[in-house]
Length: 272
Image (cartoon, rainbow, N blue to C red; front, top):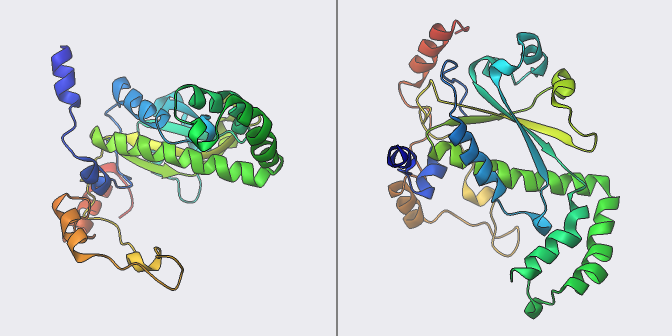
């Protein structure tokens, strides 16, 4: 049995292909639950993301769709979060913790003790207590906007790793906004936590590649060398290499995509 599970979980994709295959899935198989083991894979991937001062800036509440009443799911809706809530079998509600830097003195010392922050770069327990905490972390905590922005960025790293792990496990994911007040009493979230996203998780009912990669602006619009007047152009050789590795794939839409969407809409009784 163990061997069977290990073979079932064995990654069939390299990292570049996982990145290339990630899509925002909006048609899930609502009848097919997500295995607890795969949920744990996602959570462990999130836990191992890069994070400032080695502190946990996020919290996740995992819920199966049917743990919420139809009325509660209806209350979660926003103008962009609609039918997905009925199709996705699993929700991961993400919160940020702007107070996480308060743990800095302890978590930074952990990094000193394991050799990740070293004396060669000026680090020591005393440096954490006498310099980093009073001159960096405490001022940061006094600016609520900066603290929340930092926490959101840190949570984003964890979300990305959770999503890529899900794709590697054959799952589909999609991030959405949600109305927290609808389930505030159910979750019993501490007051200092801020809700940010719900990550819908499940097995895709649509083709997992959704008819091609989404449109993206040219590299030169967002990346620069040395200054903003020196844009970085795509390297044709690198582009070809990444096509071979399946990180860069055919752009949407595939010729059959609209027919697929129409068929899915009919199957789920949705407007076409």
